[in-house]
Image (cartoon, rainbow, N blue to C red; front, top):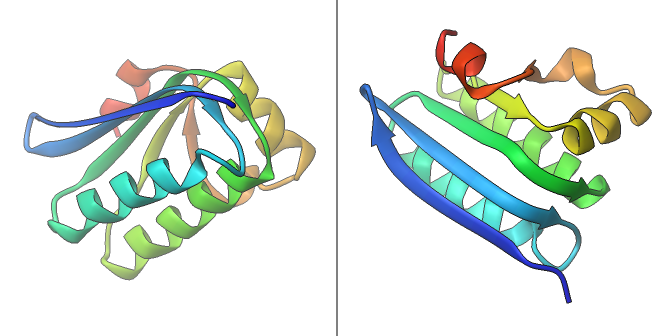
Length: 110
């Protein structure tokens, strides 16, 4: 069994969703729900995934869907990505579809 911790808090008028651990088929739903809830408030959202140690295609699916949802609301969804997140996105050649940033400070500056 893998572990994923997800927290949500307000930060400078935005909602910051922070996840740590592993995102796979058994945990992706937790990030998906947190992202959907945050986007449902209509405020800008930033995903902090800098503490993700592993992410499979289930996590990529969550990121793509959350980005699509954000765009549908007229929002950008900056994502601070760990190496593991960036690697999965690169393997799938999906970087053009996401607003990935190397750290949280850069993602918050968007």
